[in-house]
Amino acid sequence: MAEPKTVTITDNATGKSVDYTILEGTHGAPVIDMQRLAADFGYFCHDPGYTTTSSCRSAITFIDGNKGELLYRGYPIEQLAQESNYLEVCYLLLYGKLPDQTEWESFNRAVRQHTMVHEGLRRFMNGYRHDAHPMGMLVGIVGALSTYYHDSLDIQDPEHRELSALRIIAKMPSIAADCYKYSIGQPYMYPINSLGYVENFLQMMFAVRAEPYVPNPVAVRALELMLILHADHEQNASTSTVRLAGSSGANPFACIAAGIATLWGPAHGGANEAVIRMLNEIGDARHIRKFVDRAKDKDDPFRLMGFGHRVYKNFDPRAKIIRQACHDLLNDLDSSHSNQPLFEIALELEQIALKDDYFIQRKLYPNVDFYSGIILSALGIPLSMFTVLFAMARSVGWIAQWMEMLVDKEQRIGRPQQLYVGAARRDYVAMDDRG
Ligand code: SDX
Image (spheres, rainbow, N blue to C red):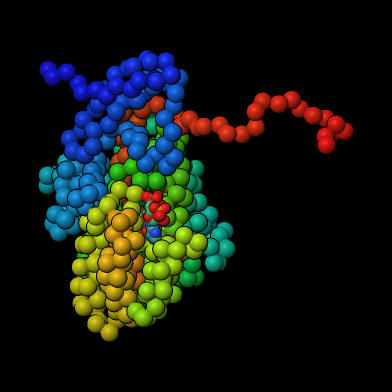
């Protein structure tokens, strides 16, 4: 067996040199195993934002930021978007393989058994202010699941872990739809388990008891695509939060609630809502240049929402797929659709930004959030629900990563170091002696 590759670190102050092993994965950049650095040299690594730090071994998702490639368990996102459906992608992310017919039917049945939420949670939800942001409601309700479902909280029990995963996947659409219904003052709908996953969600969102409701198949396909594209994405901020929370032994619902809270930020999952607000503020293609110049101005906090990415230094493959789906959906629904102008501004903005040196030099391309809001808006999803949809889709990624972390022998409680730059040690001074 070939000797492992190493790098040597030498402390020039002492002349001490130590070899550190280079770990190679299936794809992507190798990593240096730095776990012994402090023991060998008394130094820690300083890496704010973990931009060059690998936090774990994972077999779930792979991104090549330079190529603009995204794989779920090795399958290219373009093929899954074209051929698969969200619930099959859930199975793939959870179990590492595409299901055979028997596995597929069993998984479908298992998910359907858990689509309803305890009635007490609806009383809980009714305590929110009428104008509460649905993401604030979602964080609270999902965290509260742990106070209802006590029979799946033993994280050391594989069956409890799997039951929690099924509950999260099955109940997120019901909870998300309840958040929407509550925010518009309409009565809650109940899941209809004879419907598919996305049809069921759309009927819980948009059906009213007084009228029959048949989901538009064009909307179903567009939303299915959105859920697939947002299902997982390596160690992004919210997934890293779920893993960190899980590393302390917290129950799965508390960990997912922590992920939802992190996703809410406009630099992360809240960007889809921020993009629409930005496109509406731009209002007309003639104003685009002014906003692009603002985004480049260091003295202006404004950033081009939906642009840039920590990993992708090329097109986010999900943005490419969603841009085409936007085009198809707006054509299918109605070319005079109110979102057509927003889509046209987005296309023009993309063209201008991609030709601008500032964006070219920094390799800033449209990311998944740049077009997703246009699709969601065209489907009648209100702005305040955009990140809720992102959280609903990403829940399977979070819970799959949480499950992987719990069986990873390398993992222990997450506890980063710091560089202390505060006051040097000093003694307490009594009030009368303070200057
Ligand atoms: C998601 O991690 C994931 O995988 C996330 C995600 C997922 O699926 O989980 O893909 C989902 O969160 C997508 C990102 C959505 N956020 C946005 O669209 C918000 C706008 N984007 C930026 O805030 C930013 O690009 C980030 C947060 C996405 C990435 O930030 P980084 O990696 O910390 O980059 P940076 O801030 O160091 O920027 C590098 C340079 C800076 O300029 P200089 O200091 O070098 O002169 O690029 C500039 C930044 O000012 N820059 C931008 C910009 N994004 C970066 N300038 C203007 N507009 C922008 N959008």
